[in-house]
Image (cartoon, rainbow, N blue to C red; front, top):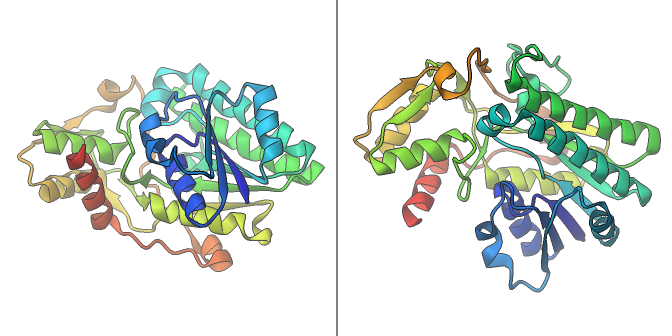
Length: 320
């Protein structure tokens, strides 16, 4: 199979490229390096079935040509991270909505399968945990920029499903729950890389808010394995799937666990949301997936749990 990965030099994209190459596929990466990095794919550049282009999905003639060459498109290119979302809401909305629109429009010309990466952020302030794919999505007001990312990804989902319903373009949507692992940067607010970096440097481990908010973290290898299984499963077309791990931990407990595993002397410091992001910032109290749908369809079950995830990330940062 020939697979085009938009955003393929990013954290998830580079791991997906590895997995596809290992099973014999030919991989084409398109990335403008706005949040991706050549370091992520440096080890793949000499592979005979790996090809990369540094450009944007908004370069439509180039995108159309690359989609024509591919059998499947995995659309990962997006604005990512709460920090980036709060600081650049226009960029976030335009990148996510317009980028997805052009990918779908060009894929539709020859009905190429498109897997769209969405996010657990779309569940918003819902308290109906664990989140199921058909549950209501509850966002805050438009005056809170924090919800711009979730809203833009919801529009991506609506548009992809509309292409499937109206034009029979085969699409699959995955909602990723806090994907973590080696190569992830804390540059855009990702919590585990930031905590690990701070702990190893002996700096204060900064917990935003009161630390009682909880998350469930999924190892990138499990996420990639789930994506590949869905691409191979014809019954997945036209559907939305959570990809995550049911294990849940508060951010306070996460900070304490990272401090313990690194042997760090760092203090754990609470930073109010108003200081960390912006005045009136709203957060999701819990974020836990119901993964029964994807489990029943392709047998997905996460294989790497939190302590092992943290150990691998810590080792990656130590090697850096």
